Amino acid sequence: MAGSNGLHSFGRRYAHITGWGKALPDRIVTNQELEQIVDTTDEWIRSRTGIQQRYIAVDPRENAVTLGTRAAMAALDVADFPVSKLDLIICATSSPAHIFPSTGSLIQDALGAARAGAFDLSAACSGFVYAISIANSMIVAGQAESVLIIGTEVLSRLLDWSDRNTCVLFGDGAGAVLMQASPVPGGVLSTVLGSDGSGGDLLAVPAGGSSIPATLETVASGQHFIKMDGKAVFRFATRVMVEATREALDKAGMGIGDVDLMIPHQANERIIRSSMKQLDLPDDKVFINLYNYGNTSTASIPIALCEAIEQGRLHPNDNLVMVGFGAGLTWAATTVKWAVPGAREVPRWRYSQRQATYSLARVRSRLLRYSRQVENSLTSEEGDALGDVLAQRIEGWRKTREE
Ligand code: ACO
Image 1 (cartoon, rainbow, N blue to C red):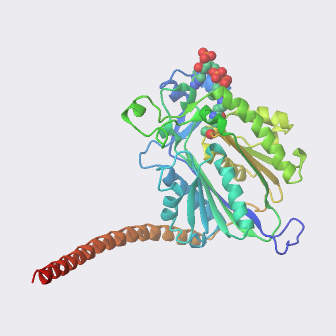
Image 2: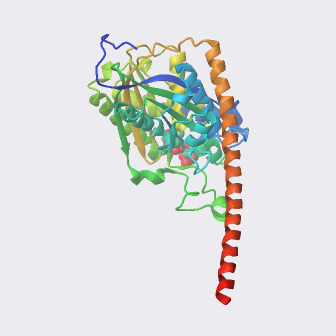
Image 3: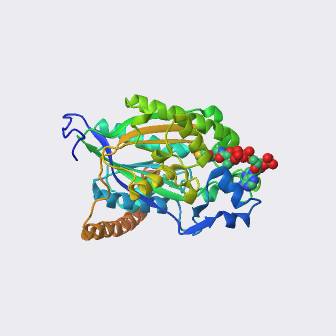
């Protein structure tokens, strides 16, 4: 990669986004279909949120791991990056496949990323930008050369499909980016992270954690579903989107006039338009695609990034701002100097090679599970054998004493 001024900044490291990908379930659910399920109308949903449809994982085999893995594979394809060289996987999710193991670890296994560390990051819809901040710090500090960031959600499984206040808003999907170290100036220029836990109750899944463990009563009273005070979240969102954007630009030494493209968290068109108005950012500098996806939480910004690139909205040296807000309450913003010219032509054989690697990863995972089972059974046989030897010794010692 060549720097904007053609010079390399020797000794310093920068974190660039070099690959991107998205994955969606097959099933689209329109507003008209929701009219059949809850007391709502297409007109209400469009006018209050902008959303027209969303993707929903109706296949029970689809979950945060499967969607996240597909998005990750797409990002590695774009970057033409071998999975064996990955240093770290950060998986931002609000609908993990399990409390533990982490969705990140299961994606690491599915990819066969044998030398990568992996963990989940919980910061709700701000999670993807939080992950960019951590990846950037790891790369700049020399702790990692490559970090795969995934935002993956199957929020439909946490929705009360009889609650019109929430079920019309969310969608399922995943997005991923690969970040790599480079001596070329650019990439992530600044990040801002924020949290105000006093607003934790405004958007929450109350039960299922250690504070309210799952019981028959919590299930019967619907406490495992998303509960939200929409108006309060709306007010919070419009305020922090503006403040976080200004702060991130300030940290990068930029003003609003320097922004080429803003990709905000795709929750509600009215939140985005109100924030952009306060920032004095023209419409053509903002990317909105929530019409087709609804709010996909941690996946919304990387999915939008992929679409923005597909539509030719990002060019080398563009200043990109990504800003998110969500449950916690949390917020996060980042400025990025875009350095990749677009998806590169990757030879077909390299793609096939990577697919073969993923097939091998499945074999590797099975072998590891099998060898662990064998090891366990061997250990218990050894344990039994040792127990027998000890029993014989004790018996012998007892007899000797008796004689
Ligand atoms: N269809 C029809 N009517 C509805 C629906 C619906 N789907 N949902 C609510 N209503 C009704 C309400 O019951 C209310 O009726 P009432 O006046 O008789 O009580 C009326 O519509 C108006 O409700 P409001 O809450 O005033 O509607 P508002 O204009 O605030 O829009 C909305 C509601 C869309 C939820 C908005 O407040 C919002 O988007 N808030 C932010 C939510 C958000 O972004 N959450 C995600 C955060 S990110 C994360 O971490 C997951």
